[in-house]
Length: 413
Image (cartoon, rainbow, N blue to C red; front, top):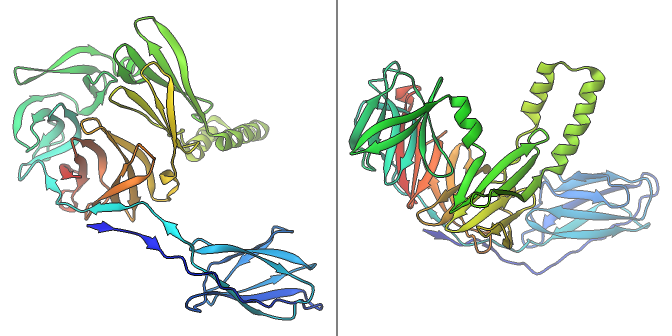
């Protein structure tokens, strides 16, 4: 179904007669819709000269005390055209302000709501983690809710089990920048290899050692590797371009949250002055300073940086040269959940939105940065670990009747 959102422009009409009351210098007025005459609540009234202001109540009424006239008022509302009103010395009482609707041409959005399917149908298999493996799926799962006997399963997209191998400890999957899969447990990490349909665990190393060496690398194209590193309490994100053939490392992009960085410096100075202990300092950082989120992805031979701090998408060649930039504003929507996904099979990127815990996946048009369609995932609240591949979105979900145990679902976009 297609929905086209157009708010028609209503011809501007405004009738106002504002004068001055010498005794109390109080400005009072009703703000109404110019086409219907209905009072408009939540309208911002701001005095340019002083910066003071107020809002209209549910009857569209406001009152302002002014020390000196004349003044200029800014009357604004998200759904109406902003107006400037000059209040002169001859103000004599309350009257009415009429505002015209704002014209908003929003991008055409196709909203899909297709059936959600359980991949593991009617099987006593409960999942703690999963990873897409070529055209198949790897699972860390338990049978019959037995959390003491985990196993790694290889299944097809229809949920048929192709192979399984028991493991001593549960863990999670990790995919490196060259798309090698690993099983990470508490004490060790193993590279996963599928040979003749059987799951094998190779090259055991310590988990910490694996993360230290592989996690900074996030993408690669041929002999080029793209690395990331955070600085200054995670408020500066730097991407690097590493040429393996020439053993050369160069800076690709620096993204800085200037506002949070200044706040951090001020707070850090205050901590030192007041003598905060290590626990208090760590709590302060954890609660108030989220790491900069501006993901780098790869589509074909192009590296794309979603620079959410500067509101633009940046496109780089595999040699690290900036090709073009595109402005964006979808991330300013309060429902944006600060996650971007890529479908490498379809060469598409998606933004994740959540409202009242209902999730929706919106495709990002990489040509102009707009949102071009939306897929809503209905009736499944608090979904986890979303992945998109070949036009299908996958996610984990806890059903109420299963308690903490999760199932794997899929839905066509």
